[in-house]
Image 1 (cartoon, rainbow, N blue to C red):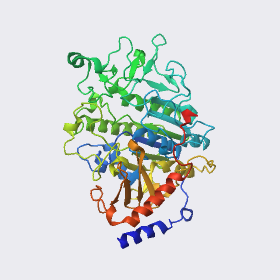
Image 2: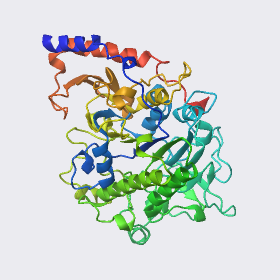
Image 3: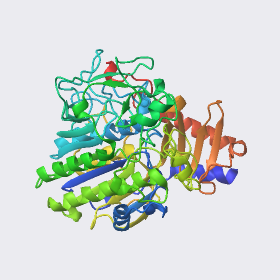
Image 4: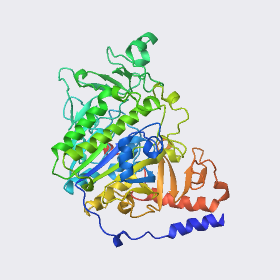
Length: 518
């Protein structure tokens, strides 16, 4: 016990190697954040899962720096996305959870706080948000009007261009929105959305009300809900969360979602040729509902969940080819590949994934996954690819996605970050680029359910429980968090609790109002 405590105190006192002593890095012409959805640490061949071949990701990994201790800021999507784009932990805002599809914008707009995309604009980059959004749209108390210009939207946050899904594939409205307007909308068939569970539009087909015979006729085999949350409006043979009426000409086809966002990304890259670009590219894969295009069916050995993972890999290949075709050379292009939160196998649909994935731990060698506070909830696949600048290999540096904001600010030479912005982001540029093998001293890990926060310091992890007790794990010896050593080390517990309180109290503390509430 004394040796463990001494090691912890030494870790606390250790000074990091000064980055100032290291040479500065060149400014890339293209910066791409490729953000997968619900992809686990062990879900691709790049991280050891040979049942899911991902040749494009394998190429990226073989030429890039592969991280083994990089983390999303939460084990669910909306908080992680908020933290990445603001450099501030989402748990500092009250009510920050998984948003409904008609939620109001929760990000600060220009003039409120500086976001990552707004900073990139000021640094001279043309910016775009493509794919899944799930951060809300519009402001005010009135219901969202989907039939007119939607504002504020990504443009007010700092994106010059956007082609997005309002929320997720399993939530209405099931339409794409380009620069604040629904794509392909017929003004004579306006969209209406409602998220009250007991609500019904006149003539609405709702899975919860349908007979077994109707469900057989209306639903794709993998589109049947497995819970009461996903059993509302049926669109494209899949039951959804929420109620939607109208907008028939604008509805997406699920098997085409990946192609639509791939095309939007390629178009943005082509139109921006010759200019510095920042692309925030968010796939819907491998989030439910899983409905891969026919050309990806059977591409893996793990059923429909593995197939959409291979489809995600195909999207990576298209983005990389578009960059090459537009003249962005590899040595001037920084690609960061990661995911928003940990994996989940069955998440609201009876799509056969649970049976197909028997024996597959998508977070291996860690425990837990999406929604949890265990390592599998936030420890992400994370690859940095920048040939000629970032040397290929592996890094065990402790880093968080929240750190991308200040790290990229330094990379592009932006040194005017306001005191009220990016408060939780740390400059980890040299860790991300392989010149600092250690990374952070400490890192909080968040689970949305119960708003619980664990604390990592080195390989030691303090984890709170719903019962109000504490658990302690030595991840170096116990990556699966099976052996709770809290009872053996009360001094370490108390030291961690002091550090965790300091983190929570910093930068305005917790329970600040959402921007949409102001």
